[in-house]
Figure 1 (tube, helix red, strand yellow):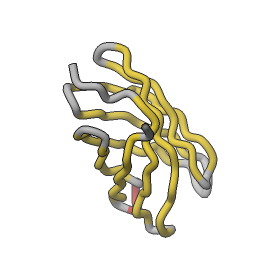
Figure 2: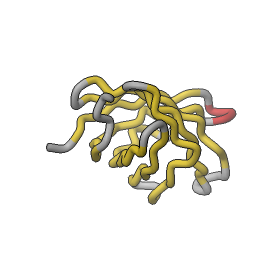
Figure 3: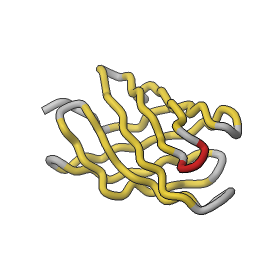
Figure 4: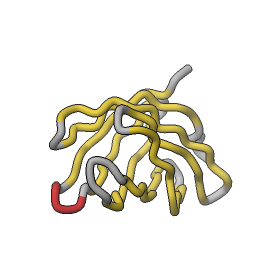
Length: 100
């Protein structure tokens, strides 16, 4: 089973500019918990699923406006790359590197 666990220093390319944050992944078999902590506060992972090196999850944002973001990412070694669906704002790509 690929090791997806860890804390990743990420940058998301959003309509509000680059958003830096730390994405934490704690897997448990085919599911995972975690958070994305950044300038907008901390968002909890919900419905986190692990399929090999692919992660899918949702996050409920309240600021600057309420929305549920559908997210997916692939872990490749210590790199993570993915997208967050931002409702009416389209998709934001993000990438990051796992902390040692």
